Length: 140
Image 1 (tube, rainbow, N blue to C red):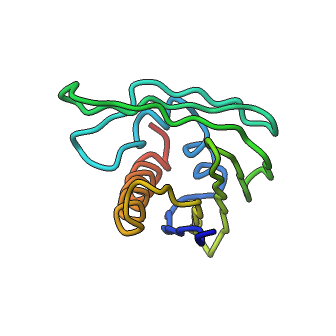
Image 2: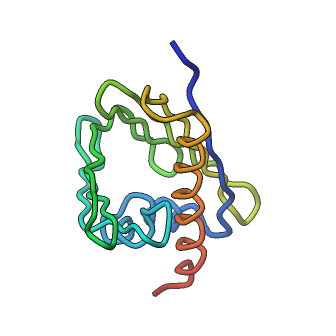
């Protein structure tokens, strides 16, 4: 078994806002992309243990797309989200640090892409999340 891959960011915003932006379908559609030429066209979240989530990620030129979906296995409001997707699992931790929140995502790697590619892709999405959360922290 391979070790999980971990990505991390600091978000200069209150924990309540960081949590909301991470878990709200309306917000997810705004930040959930690894690069400018991709976007999330749909997102659904049933934030409870046993609840499911899904997001549709597509290239803006329409050339390709995929669904990212899974089931929540643990939820601790403002602290932890764990979920499974396919035969893999992920853990998202939210830790307040002063006036910011450290968000750490650990996930099981797939067998298709290199560890570096997966880490870069997930980090890019997390960086996009942090930028959006900071930009919207004082309301819309």
